[in-house]
Amino acid sequence: MYSLGVEGDETLLAQNQLSMSSRQGTGYMVGHHTMSSTMGGAAPAVFVDEDAEPSPRGEEHTPIIHFLTTKLLRFSLSLKSVSMALMCIFFLAFGGRWVFTFHAYPDMSNGFHLSMVVLMTIYLIGTLFLALFQAFVADDSKWTKGFRTGSKILSAAVTLDGLAAMLRLVQYLYLYNYLSVVWWTKFNVSKSEWILFTVSNVLDGLSLLSYGWAFFYMEVYHDEGTYEELAWGMFGLFSLSGVL
Image (tube, rainbow, N blue to C red):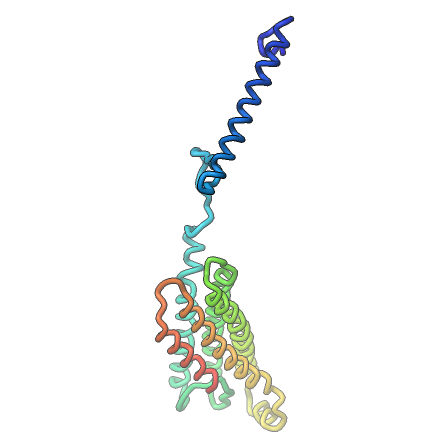
């Protein structure tokens, strides 16, 4: 008690005064809390530190995170579309006929196969960017359940698409290095390399079907800017591409 500035016989009096003041303060807080709880079910007062900085969590993100969650979908799909369009153009430029398909063309030169290797690499990069977009939106609890369902279907679609793209990249590297008359004759007899030409097409078809379902759910159940006609259009076109 000497720290309080009292000495000798005044110690007991100071202790009694401190005890009474603490009981009065406690009784006031309890009474205030009880009255607040009983009057209209009001919640007790919440003390807020006015000097504290606002929490960084919420809708505001850094520019890189904002890009990864808003612009990366368009960028990745545009990259994949441009690479696919260039494949069709190079196919016609090197003497191809009708529609470009991912099959072996023994009459094509090595320049064609090398250009396909470069374009398939760009296509695979676009698929990786799309996978990065999916990783940023899959577990965001602010979205609706339907949108999150679409994002999980998108994960399966990206996985199948990535496997198909890697198989096709290996396919064109293989053709660029080993395509010859002897190899083509052996291939027609044994069909030993069918996994490079057939499995990749099956995986790509399944991925296109999954893309259709994923984009349908993500468009219909998005909180802003939803167009049901656009969702049905994407679902129909991707499904048709997957079947063909």
